[in-house]
Image (cartoon, rainbow, N blue to C red; front, side):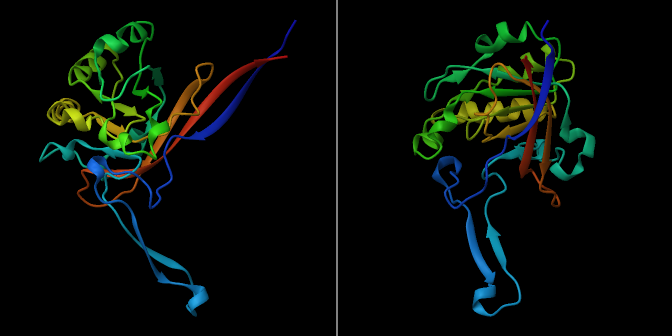
Length: 231
């Protein structure tokens, strides 16, 4: 009789910020300025960073589209711990809009979820112009569908640069509004390539940079993956 083992592995779900990090709409990226350098005679190394709070792996808080919405730093620590995350893998083409029909059959087989991660594998194009210019987008209807389907639903995340497709920006604004008006958070530009079908994602912790009155913030995100093995 075989013995069952359950291995736990922690993986990054957020990208490293670099000077090559793509920006939505081809906007400004990360600027790194060396303020002090040991090899120049200073006592230490320090750098000055300049970038949008929506560059790289980040979270959109309700304040992003709701003038008096909840800000990133207002959440409790426990709000950034997701104990019922699910991953939905889709085969999606450039600029295609993901709708309820794409995910409802999968969701019908799941009891509950607090964080829904959509894996399109579009991040393989992250070093190309198409990543920001022609990514898949997400329909506004998903906010109502996911919140009605899952009692614990509080956030959606994706491996595309935004919930908004650059080719369908008006629809993208509606999608942002649909989620954020209801108080849900949006995690954009994640890396989900290490999440395989055979693995179970049991927990996600997202830690945003906390600053005053933030409508969104870069995040460091870790996932707990459980994989059953037999010997």
